[in-house]
Image 1 (cartoon, one colour):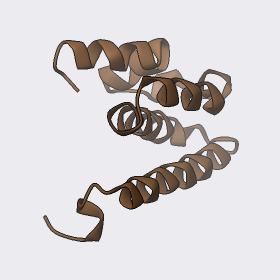
Image 2 (cartoon, one colour):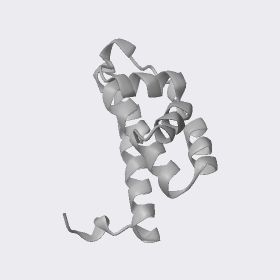
Image 3 (cartoon, helix red, strand yellow):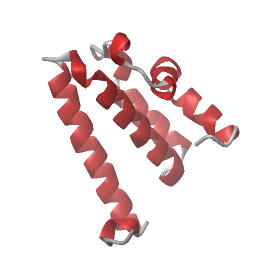
Amino acid sequence: PTGSLMNISAKNIEKHIYSFKYIIDFYSMKLKSDSIFSPNLVALTQGYISFLLKHKGIKTAFLVYQELHLQHKPIDLTRLEKRGNILFYKFGQAFLLFAQLIGRE
């Protein structure tokens, strides 16, 4: 794959962060009216925090995760099907750190 966003420069990392924030805010709003957006929001949040862990470090990822308040959103757990998303929802960034330690992330 090629393209301007494939280059991992500081500018592109910030573009990715902006995109994650935008789409997570979008799905958070949609979730208020329909729980069908639960899996998307959890998966995107998981991807965002993983991205931050890789490119910004543990402290930034931890602070952003706390700001997102995923546990306070009306997530319909019955709609979460992927084991990784369920574990991330239950254990947060601790799950992602564990996954990195065992080489799954």
